[in-house]
Image (cartoon, rainbow, N blue to C red):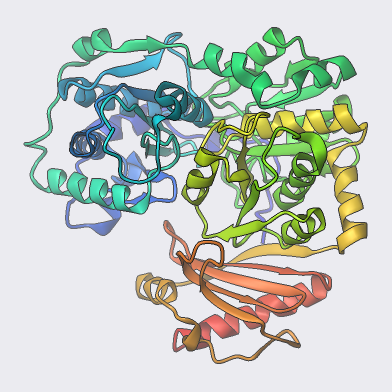
Length: 553
């Protein structure tokens, strides 16, 4: 249930004390025996806050040293691209990381303008540096390969910090790498950081090289999007960076490509005082939330399309005059229909569509109508990386408004989520079809039916979450769900056989998936029904019962 102030402008009492936050970063000492204060990599790196001693200088220098040890063991001795977003903890963590990287003789490349760097710009830089040499498995030719670090907690509240590693394939590091890095970092913290190499910041900054992340990325955009069509059609775009790392990028995109594009809010403020509150009354830069995007939704009539990005610009939000903020699943389905429906003749006919198993089944129906293979993978963008690298995936997308796709010639663009190109794709769709993405989605509903989709959270302690992650299909005794026979009980993704860390149950017209949260004492239930909201509610109710029974409750 939404907080009574959700969607309302933030007030002074909602703002983080930046000085207190940064001071706690430098003065807090994590307890190595407290699980909540250890380094832990989720689907997008280590996240936490200095206020609860879960994201402090010790975590960052230890994690950076662990990354240095890892890349040395893998033989990666090319440059490391280091970027950061606009969170208050990002700059101090960026500085700490730089001190350790230089001390370990790593060639570090930082932004030539000393600006903020979106996640997709780092992925783009890594892939560009490595050319065709990258692979997603082991390699005997690792010498000279580049990798990267992005200091960001993505859309998380202003009090949070985040730190993620992208290896030479340019995408999020896989579980083998992150598990080893986290274990080594926690070992270093337990050892009092005695094995961490470090030099003073002035020396580290002087040693760092420069890379034009912004110019290189923006100049290359025509290789992935039809910006000529957008310019010639005069599509009016309103881009809201939500105070994040894409702020300078949008202005440059407008100038370099001569687009009718307005940066709706160019302000960067680590308190994010200009935001409207999210569903729980917190400030959160979630561009898929109608509450966080309320101010942009109010201005939807000013533009042909308005777009938002989270703090590191790996997510997208699409606002149209006729429907407001699109559900992320809806836009993914429209984007897939456009890209695979004739807009990319340079793509191989064998290029597949990738989606996470908690994304809408509308995507399955669109893929089937296009006679294109669809691959369902576990939650986490890392699962799309191999296919995007070799071109066997034309598109990879997840329900949380994250996606990327190939260049127009069928080669790799980025292997991490790219909210900038998805936002610009909405403008391309308008320019080339004369209709908004939401109008296209209405056509999909007529053709395939209208799904009702929702996610809810249910309480779960650490033991219950571990049990949920370890479930097998045999643990589910139910044979029906909301009046329909169960057609599948999945604990592995059908697209690649990887464990999903939870459970998915499907019927002919509905499904639910239950997964433990990596950061909170809850599990998440995703559910969808093509039989309407009332049937969805029944699916959700029975999903709780199925999971409770499977956990022995």
